[in-house]
Image (cartoon, rainbow, N blue to C red):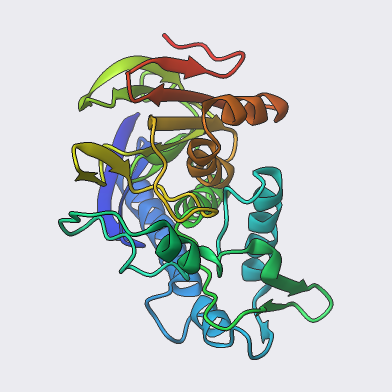
Length: 307
């Protein structure tokens, strides 16, 4: 048995698809099938293409409901359920947040005012995403509202690509979407897949290892994108209620059997804060998390075994 991997840019992220097989042709064919599936999902959910279903929903905000594929409808439905359990800390209607408020790609030198931030977040409200199951339509109640799947799309794509590969007889593999990954089966040597948990000060160094076969893992960290204003570090994770970045947490790593759920939960746990985040995780079966605060203190949910 050997590992065959391919990395390429999909959905604006680097995806690495790994298949364990004896046959390079079988591996190649399956990696291609996984890529095709991720590209299909990207077409449905991208906001960069004005013709995509997501864009059509956004263009008709405050105007009229839009009929969508069942797949799009159901992902929005699951997103709204996650908004409910996280009390709005996860919200796909964050798309209305203007780049002019927070742009972590450029040198920000000052904070927006609280008033400006609040004015901008008033459009973020998952309760204004109206679903009609009978007609399979999605309606954004307020003009200017926008949805986006940045918080759940990578995990969803990884989960769907994994499904395709399992159906085609791939016994072991990993779909890694820029650090949000799902693994099944075993390594070529028969051992379970393991992952290093990054040290937030030295992301290339792992401080611990976890077995992740048949599990998914997602990390939300401020060591990749942040702004330093007046000597204080602001994460690129925005609290949808205030419009301000969260502070105090360096990274949140979530482990779940499902990649979509892991991806969706990483950011809201950071937004909810350590105490509330861990409390929520402990209520949900088979969900675990590791939180590292700004002082490098490590918090873990119940029943998690770091090596």
